[in-house]
Image (cartoon, rainbow, N blue to C red; front, side, top):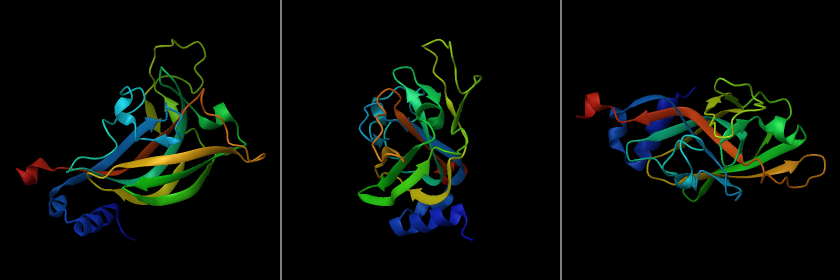
Length: 201
């Protein structure tokens, strides 16, 4: 069994990132929503309000950052206020998200299905129930993690652009589902590497 740290170091060595061994790893996460309804998530994060819709400034990590993705979650959000909701609660249990993860110009995950039916709540609202009837419209609910798809084990290296491309289908009719009123968001959770100042300065 290869540990998360071993995977990160192996990729770093292949990329010539020799300083990565002097860094420390911890859990980390990134999230963003497809407010443009483009079928892509993360590549326009710089345009989105933080932290309501994203926690990124751009869709690439700095020279001293990397993320080993271990869990992928999808959720629904409302524009323009960033309220988060469970995917199944909004679109029903007859739907499936089919997605690709693109790092650089390579599809590292392709046509991966994540079904709405039977899934746990992907996101929960801080201090609120999942359905927030009567909530003040300007409230921004910051997501918290609940697993949707586990065991991914793919490293997003430093200074390489990446994004998720997706479509939502009705599994009964095969039709593409319109997500305009409740844009789809994505959450990548795993082991994140940051510069260890104790050994590098």
